[in-house]
Amino acid sequence: MPARTLTRTPFLRLALLGDAAASGATGLLLVTAAEPLAPLLGQSTPLLHGASFVLLPYAAFVTWAGTRDTPPRWAVRAAIINLLWAADSALLLAAGPVSPAALGTAFVLAQALVVLGFAVMQWGALRRAEAGATPVCALT
Image 1 (cartoon, one colour):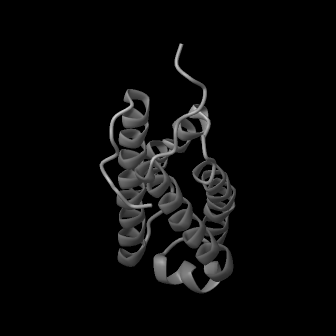
Image 2: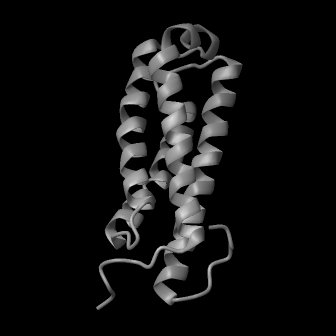
């Protein structure tokens, strides 16, 4: 049976804390500037606020996981929820109840790509930590 915690590698820390910073910054932007952004993005203010209310607690959770010396394995796996966020972003544009402006479409696609990048980083870091491999990134 695998250990319940992981040894925090610099790459895992980078993946988690980078995700937390991006999620937190986006959440703060949406909660503080939803009204002026809504017409520019072609999105409703409640939708932007709703996204921020998901992003801010998620950012706090990923910050917590990224600052543990031995992050719980379940916490790192939960952070891979980014795959769902990226898929939901694509679905929102393809079949959702919204019709964003060009800037709104670009915003949703850009954040989906960033989120997908963090999911790939977190998955790779998790696999390396589970395998006991040397991290790819030597940042501390």
